[in-house]
Length: 456
Image (cartoon, rainbow, N blue to C red; front, side, top):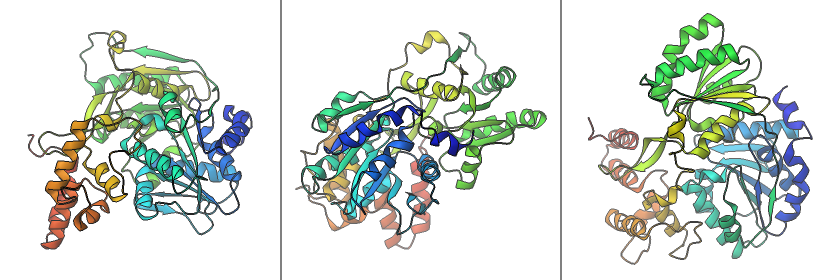
């Protein structure tokens, strides 16, 4: 079945609750919960858009660039319009919109930049926050700003929060005890297989064994979750001879991959695929025909490096909720199988869900953005960040010259807020530009954002 036919099916679970979502959104806000594959990402934004006044626009927020592009393409197919017409997308370094665009799919980072230049969101009738359960700090910032805007400048603004796995009570409360609309999903059984306890083989060996078994015992595409690009490239080398011998297509998927290579993963038809991916394929992004998932149980998460004071990606064990999300990718269109490369006994010790980013991250960058937007200590956070983290963030901003002792933004602070990087790195880049060594400082900033330069 093609992507267009899949999404045009009227029996998608969310299709049955669209009238409830439209009506609830008219009150100002609504929370929508539905399992993966139920159609919420494709159907809800379009339904709300059609309920807005003539000429009003809608923004659909996605945490990741790959998903934003893919979602925009699928909604355009659903609407029967060319991408970049009524439906378009805007992500970092890439945009496909026009004067006719009314439904914008964009990342949270782009939305924050939009707020810095247009706090009233003129012409925007609704904002839909998808995959909210990921709880990135950018998503929390956007939600808080939307709550503030709706309660002051734009009481007509509609806010829709969507998630597959979300503790809804705090969100409902923040949104003034707004309505909750839920839909049941179509669930196919997924056979979970764990690694043997005490198996000391390398992750690469476990991946190869699981891929060979899945190729023999399932008939669809394979999706392999690995923590990062380095691990993907190593596994690609090991699996390339197997894929070539069997006539399968071996593909990679990660955030910095060129768009044309990302699209190869999403195209239907042709050879059987073995897809090596980071957690970008965990949510939103739908790859049709997956019948087996091989899960390393690992991911990279932003954490503050004590050596540099900068957020850096560090390898962690995923939560039970993430493991369930990944396994569910094998059961979208029929029964599937999931190979978890850890033993069942250790699974019970994994955390149920990852801690929201706002409770574990450096706050200098979001605090600067809030200061530029005129927000203070009464900002409507979903989870109030730790006081020590707030104080440390403000001390750093004062030290960098971004704010003064009275928490007022300086001219330098306004410049730093326009740079999509941590204020430490932004300060480095500005200094490099003023001293004629921008190229060198850009390389240094890129290295500092990737790894700890003091670890050998």
